[in-house]
Image (cartoon, rainbow, N blue to C red; front, side, top):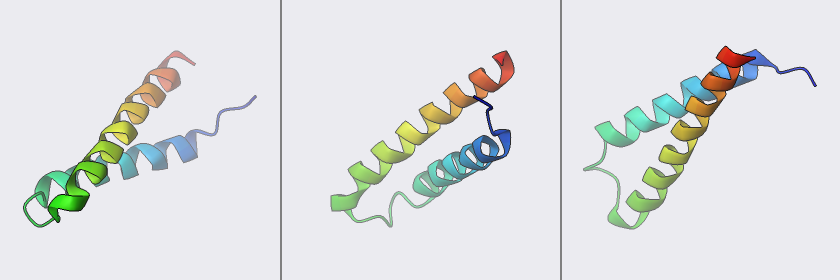
Length: 58
């Protein structure tokens, strides 16, 4: 199976952008949503690092 590096690059940029937005706007996010958004951003960032490692090894 061929790996599409363009989609992986877009995902990595979006994941880090979401993490940056969450960090910069942490005081403006409603408390009820804060934990879920932070958890989803953390999962996306971890996946982005995994994709980076796979891209360098592959």
